[in-house]
Every structure is written in structure tokens, then in C-alpha cells.
Image 1 (cartoon, rainbow, N blue to C red):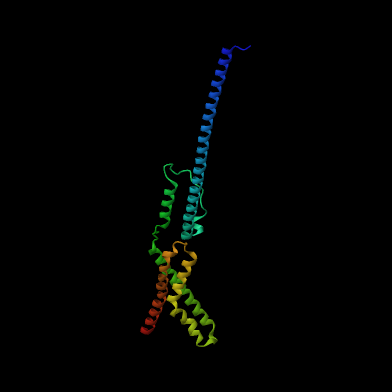
Image 2: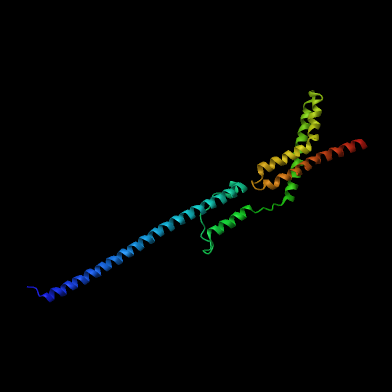
Length: 210
């Protein structure tokens, strides 16, 4: 038969072990709940970071679209990949804000040279059209008074011809962004075309004097 004292000690040992296991199970359950809570928070944090990243990427694409619209796709190119030379203490939102400010800053173009260029272009275009008109008038002797229109019409329209030549050059040969500033320089073509009037006036004066 089993000794009552031995049975009692065995029971107490079993009870203590069961208690320790119950406590360990409760502790494990508590840690599991905490881990689950942290996991949920981590998932929520990840979702927030993904949403923030998507917002930053969308903002970057918007800045790049604005840059492309302003300067033209040929000058800007494709949206670049993230660089490796960015300081780690710089926030992406701060960098994008600075980039956006730079995109909207006015560009200082030297317009003096542009005016000179359009003056020369307008003068050359008016002279060429005038010379062509005179050549056509010489070759078409049977047209009577129409020859006068071919000969002197370009002379009278020389300022307009020069201005239109300057406008065409600006529209076709000027970069997308610079057009905002260069469009006013078409008046240089008007002045250049007016140089043909000055030459015609000199010829008239010389003819009258001599």
C-alpha cells in the first residue's frame, strides 16, 4: 500500500508543477497577445508608410510633370530613379518641397542677344523675299502692272515679313520654356524688316538728288 505521507508529497509536487505550468501558460498567452498587438500595430504602421510613400511618389511625379510641361520633354527626359547621394538627415517631403520651389522659380534668359538675333533674322528674311520679288518681276515681263506688286510689295511688307520670320523661328527653334520670354523679341524682326524701308528710302533720296 502507498504511504499516505508519500502520496501527500507527490500530490503537492504535482499540484506545484501544474501551477507553474498554468502560470507559464498564462504568461505565454499574455506575451502572445502582446505580440499580436505589436504585429497589428506594425501592420498598421506599414500601411501608413506605404500610403505615405505612395503620396510622396505621386507628388514627385507631379513635380516632374510640371517640370516637363515648363521646359519640354526633350530638355527634362524621364523621371530619374532615387539617388544615392542624398543626405540621410533630409526628409523626402522637404526635398520635394525644395524641388517644387525650384521648378517654379523664374528663369533669367539674356534677351538682348535674342533681340539682336531676331533683328538680323528679320532683316535677312525681308531682303531675301524682296530680292525674290524683284527677280520674279524681271522674269515676268508680260504681267504689266502686276510686276510692280511683285517688285515693291515685299518692300512695303518688309517689317511684317521680318516679324513673321522671327515668330516662326521662336515657335520652331526656341525651347519650350524660353518661348514665354522670347515671344516679345519678335518685335526685333519687325525692326529688322524695317531696315529694308531704310535702304529703300536711301535709294529714293539718292535717285532724287542725282
